[in-house]
Image (tube, rainbow, N blue to C red; front, side, top):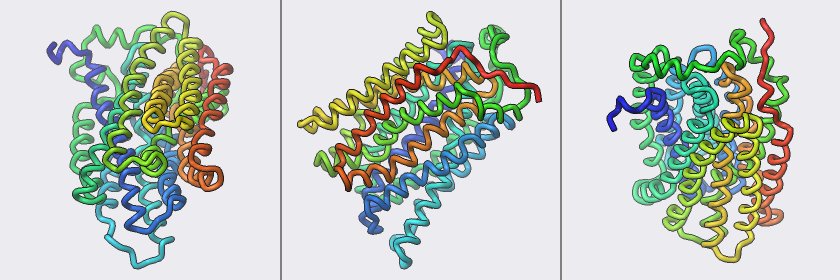
Amino acid sequence: MGASAIPVRWRFFSVIFVLSFLSYMLRQHFPVAGEFIMKELSISELQMGWVYSAFFWGYLVFQIPSGILGNRFGPRLTLLVAGAFWVLTCLLFALLPGSFESSVAVTIGLLIAIRVVMGAAHAPIYPVQAASVERWFPVGQWALPNAVSSTGLSLGAAAAAPIFSIVILNYGWRASFLVFVPVGLLLFSIWWWYARDNPREHPAMSVAELEKIQANRSDLTQDEGYRAWRQLLGHRETLLLASAYFTHNFVFYSFATWFFHYLVNILGFGIIDSGMLATAPWVLGAAAATVGGWVCDALCHRLGPKLGCRVPAMSGLIGTAIFLYLGLYSSSPYVAVGLLSLCYACTQFAEGSFWSAQIHLAGPYSAPACGLMNTGGSISGILVGPLMPFLALKVGWIAALSTGSIVALIGAVLWLFIRVDKPFQPRVI
């Protein structure tokens, strides 16, 4: 099949897919590098937990602002600027000295500062992606592209542990950050060259495809100016989605932050073995994300957006709770890895439903609305980093991580109150 047979919207989205892949490859390589950073710089688990969570402070604080900027200046410029900071933070980590003459507090402070900027640089990716999906894909076909992006992030995370375990063992943890500098420069150059803010601006867009994208939009949220985003702060459905996304990401970030550490220090696998086993949840999650997005779009077409988004989201969260509990309390390390992989797959099955629901609700305000929703998700990332080692000191790692089962079930209950069929209606400003 030639390139011309592939719709322009999917060719455009392939760049976002690669961006999502590399973003999570960078994110998930850090817990691998963290095992070596802790040893070299004499940092404890609890102290490293604060370094891990620092990423989410920058990520959280810039979620809504990046959504506003994406809505105001367009996805193309917003992601280019974010990419410059993304590359810079990788370079700063690569240039960290081999030893610090200052106190441990100063060492941790420096690591935290760079991680905060790194989180801020990553903040625009998914709100801007949501805005692009709303603009570039037909009404009601929004879950699948968002889910495909989740497939990209899962594959990127899957590639991180085995690849960078080998890189770090042979060349050191600084070299693993340096890899991302030329790759990031190339990726964001391609983004600036190929991306457009609206499908009608793309030179390859055909009239037929553009008509398909713009059909059936009269009943959606109308654009009353970008300043109307402030009204989202009081929008019931968006706030409920943000709360539910907190519960979803509580388990997601438990995997993203501490799963590699759990494999090495609790289940007793070696670094290389852990690097290989750590790919299992991400690979299974990659497949589940695409399936979940397809199911959500199909159900939205058949049942409407309220049930179409609610059913896969609740199913995924309930499955997350069950498999997390069973995996943590399994007596076999390999069975535990299998069950925990299914747990992560359930989180990804639900992922596309969240983003599709928010796009259905917010329409042209998808960037700031998804930024608000992802703010809820990012709060869990901040909490999980230091909370898990703190709880582990009190009750052990298994009991600490199993709190995610309760949180996931709360998220499933919240979905009973989310009305995707009641879109945001901004007042004229």
